[in-house]
Image (cartoon, rainbow, N blue to C red):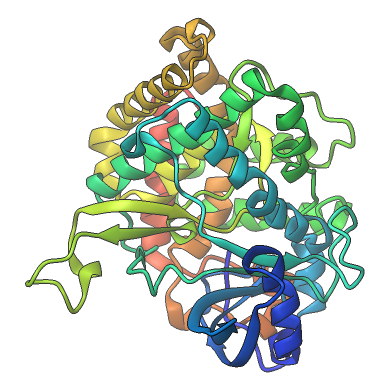
Length: 432
């Protein structure tokens, strides 16, 4: 999740020298920042797990001058949000995704000669980071943590509309790249197990969100979601089952020694893969040169916000993406097609990376789907209130506390329609 920072955000304490220190490992020790300016990048409701700004830096290296357009991610200024999102762990996870995992994805695909049109290239460009004042990436993140990425908006990428949802072309592109994103991780696990352990798994540390290990807080989370669903007449016959699934999900999240995910499908999972955490690039022509985001057919996608990554079943990302981000008509008419597309692209990617595909047959994939899809319902139900929220009803970052996070839905009729459809479709598929 994302959000607009308030006036106390630590970005304004960054200096030229700090930017130089952050950039030098990637750009060289001779990089100099002559001046810079920053401004808020995201809107309320977009992201509560970090404060996000855009930065424009005028830099000099030798006799060359250049302008860098960056995204600057910082820990939230609110102590409540820092604890709620377990920032000590989750910020470090995201830094490791860019610093450790992304290069391995690139290297493996180059080594195996994967054609450029089939390569997974979903990470924004990484420019630098620190996780704590000690500069120790192996230690927990603190309030001084910073992550610098390329500003995708400057490159023409656009975010989708969370309330409107994504059409079929967007969903097909997202599912295709998600399948390949998961498959490269599986290939790394098979072909380079030691590299996988030292890179991917370092981005998969467990975390506890919103203090749910506390019994009182956990009960509030469950009650909040149950109350939201209880207001929808068509969901009442399934309310008892829904509450049971919520409690089972909570037990899994707070289990200090959870069982390892089932092999062989276990992979690097984004774990928050919805419309706000991806950006699309569109082909431009004379008709849309001034606003390429108004076209309907995307040609490229980037994934963002890797704070909650896990080593888990890929089904979690796939089902959450479909039910959180597609317009309801697309789910109704094309859900099975999208699931089939995912498996096809997953197998095609593994084949291109010279991996044995026998363990990943469609029958075994179907078992993986039916085992893990029901577990994603709590995630979908809780996030529905934020996905459907009216912009003028979403709290500012500085106003967020536990009561605000757990209040009744912000989305009105749109929320009710979305939840009703999800519950009824899960019932029809035997997932509820």
